[in-house]
Length: 209
Image 1: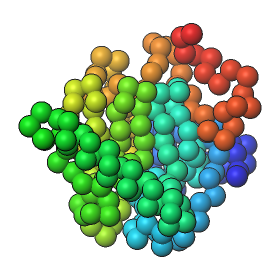
Image 2: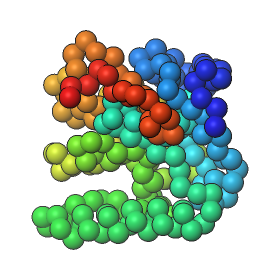
Image 3: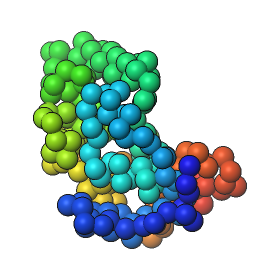
Image 4: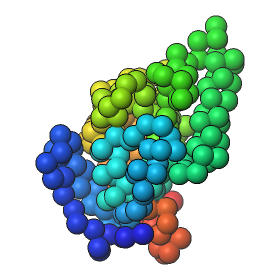
């Protein structure tokens, strides 16, 4: 694991470079760590690649939380059992949602490896979940889908999880559709990698007690 002081920051020439630069400015990865993921092994385990902006995020920030409220996961794997547990668990959750929703319309989506199907990459303190809709060979073209638990609706966004994070971080405080990160007016948002969370005496100093 390589942590913040050793990271080479920047967006490079990626199509996402503007969103990368904005995220680095809005939430510097002071407590980020490179997860050092073997992406070739992950692709072999999952049967698909992962979006380039997600790989960039896990190299600069890693798996962890924004203000202890929006958590970004590293992918399960690369062993097949971990991948199967993740996809089967999501399939069960979607089936439960479908069964218990009014009229059986709780979700229009299946879980990957069905295509189009969902892979989850994040969750919020309010019970919102964030996914990619795997729909084609190019991961950079997968839409981002959000399950808004409070409004009990699915919201589809254009491709780009880092772009969605940028929008969440810059949205007005009263924008309920983007209220996935708890914050206080005028206080900075912090990201803390889950691997170093316990080593910090007060990881969330700018949040209310």
